[in-house]
Image (cartoon, rainbow, N blue to C red; front, side, top):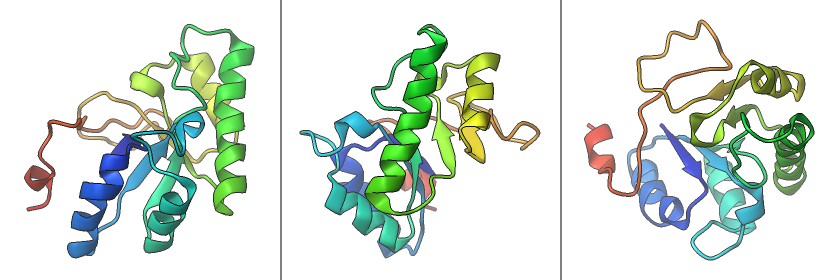
Length: 150
């Protein structure tokens, strides 16, 4: 399972359920929002990482990477990775395109930044043919996690 943005409700509700069931997940973090109201803070991110939750990058500010300037897109992609690696002391392996929006140029920037794979918001069973355009089911605050834990 993956969770986007780094909201506090992941820590308060999903994380305890995952622990109860001895499961892990990937949480994609908007680095500019760490510690802001409604978002997890550094201490919580370290705790979930220590448990086994993978922390991935979701850019600095959550822009549409397919419409901003190439230099801004590159900064969002690379600086978010660097920020998280410094904050958490571990290599960041994966990237999540904000709102699933990307193009070939953005995908190339993600590869060049040193990520191993990236996820979209395209719903479909993923085939791993393109590790930089992995598909997944989208969950939001109204989605019941219990539907996925059976």
